[in-house]
Length: 566
Image (spheres, rainbow, N blue to C red):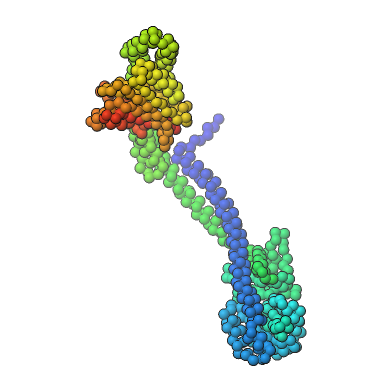
């Protein structure tokens, strides 16, 4: 049987690098081509739409200005006086030229009386006297003297100047038509307005699709109508080419704007992009081959160092640090491996300390379970209660049995509500012993009831509060508050005892922050050290005390961690 030839890490890396580079590279090409197609269509659509909207805005302004001007001139006293008396022609012409000189689209101006005689004109009207079309225009105005006529019509004047759109209005005086005023807009000026540099073909048509002006004669059909052929996708077919069309009607006018752009420019883009992709693919493949060799060579050296370091760790050598200086992820991996060694050694030291601390706590807990003074005090209180109050004696026995049963349990972490039941029983016994000399208050936030905390967490603090609270005074108030704040579980034990001086408070806080403790403050130190080892340096005990006012001991535990067993 032939054995399959195995590749080493260097060859495997080079081989896999080439294979897996093809996949994203192919996806990138497909996405790039798709993006190019979509972007080309979007650009074509956008520039066509923007051109139509820009032309629409310009033509709307032209239409509005002429509409307002002809209505103003038709009721102007100067015009009416001129039509009636033939006097003041200079004022009429002055008003027209003053308006016309400020327009993008220039026009020819006529004033005609009811017999068809030209009273005023900005162009020689000789040809129009016998022009049948112009006579029909006058008749249409005369039929609706109260309306403003706006329509597409074409008239040719000298110097090959054609007009393509007309505004007409009857001049009415004392409810009688005395003449007509007409503005005819030059087609060439309209063509300049609808010309957009980023657009191929633009035109404006009336409500009957008759072309008023266009930038290309290929759009003109029979009777100067725009009636394009469409393919199945809705593209306009002109001159053996496909065009994208966008039309927009100008509000409050009978005019619509149509913009057309050919798909040929999009095809040229596809050819250019395809050539670019092919050239880039060849160049990139050559680079991939070169980089695969470089990467596999350098990475194999880093892997060898890591394998050697792991072999030393397997043999129990925790000083086998790795030195990788490649300025890449392998250097980060090597640095993280070194950090892992440091943390592993630190964790082993902490676990050792935690084990020792737990052993001390468990021994101290067993000792406190049968503390002779505590048992003696409870039994002495029980003896008096039997004689005085049998019900209280029964309560003492029940509470003591619960305390002993809870304290001999082997659970290292319990739910907070269970530990607080133990605290309440303990304080109840102490209150029975001290009567009204001991008062306590407990406030526990509802959301903290089910979190897990180390067992008998508050007992050493409460013992200290009772032990030192009766120095120099006869009454003690102990207040316990448990709540959450900024992601932390806060447990506060406050008393109104004699408190501590600043020197004593500083000494106790220094003991809590030290790594070892040889003083008599074993209970507080063990609780603090245990919390630090379990939850980190941000947890533990903090003491605030004012001499003559009392002491507040605050325990801090991460709230998100305290929801699990510790």
